[in-house]
Image (cartoon, rainbow, N blue to C red):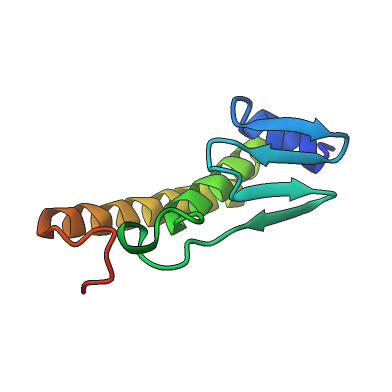
Length: 114
């Protein structure tokens, strides 16, 4: 059985770095996803990025993290339920990306405008 920190290292080999024996920090997400002693923490974005600056993760980043994590676990012990979960997480990521594209096209992405 894979331990959490081993799984994270496999899932995100270029972004999770060991800073001590029990802590991995994702540098790609500006330290907004942290593993510390078996606990995963997500620092959520508070406010619109263009209005308050980048201060946390967005929904697609969390969904990607979870999908990749499940994929690594599935590589160790494959099961159709894991593949279905990954499929639906990818659909959710695509829906969020479509929302972002639509907001970008209207010029309101990163703001609190509707």
